[in-house]
Image: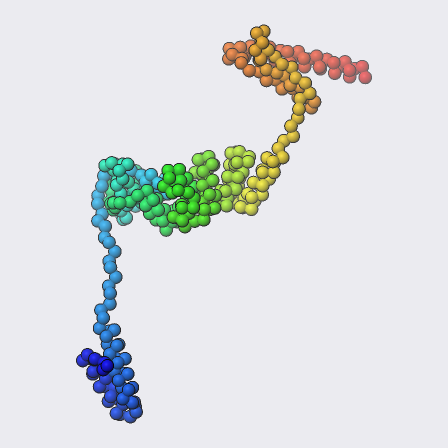
Length: 341
């Protein structure tokens, strides 16, 4: 079947024929092949390129500051007062450059719920602003509330593991995600990482706050081992090691060694010394008051209970008089013994 050519292709085919007659010694089949190739090329060049669709444009709206509420699943928990003040100053000199992103939820009727922009709304409130620029989006659920803000913070490098710890725990507690596996898929993290980060929530809030303030010096490795030290040795020891990290005196490896040492001490525990004898005290009606334990290493422990506040001082004075009298007797005996020798 003969190939049907358009006008441009015919011209190109004719030019090919002229080149052949000029000495290129092309066969008739070669000329047709060139014409067919040129026709295909012409067809391709005549197709208009597809223009990419323009991104959707969202209108910016001025909304009352008093009608804005925080994101219930805000991925950030720790904010620096200094950065809020700096942003407020920027508002004063340059205005609000980027609108906050908000949505509406049935749980907050008549309010705008922040998806992204907590620092900006705090800066506006600190200035006493009545209105703020906002991009209002509809149809966002709780997962959107978290993920949009989470990825925005990650891109700005504002998110810390300490923020993640509190946010992820709330997401799981509220059932926004079924388990750590589903949450891990959503944020692109391994479930083991999710578990380690969430474990930081067992630390006292003031320790988490301090870690977040020094986030440039304290990573997950530091924080997790301080958490282990806290579990095994208590808050004062954990606070000590946190101070060492902030001062640049403790690496992750050093913290691991400290945590292991505390685990060993906890496993072995102090040796328990048993008393050699004890004296029990009872009221005349038989109700137990307490006991005096006597130990072989020279210690004596008195434990009493059920003493009214008004009687405690009188009892303390009588006990002091008895002990003072006993101590004087001991001194006299030791003195007589020394003189006799």
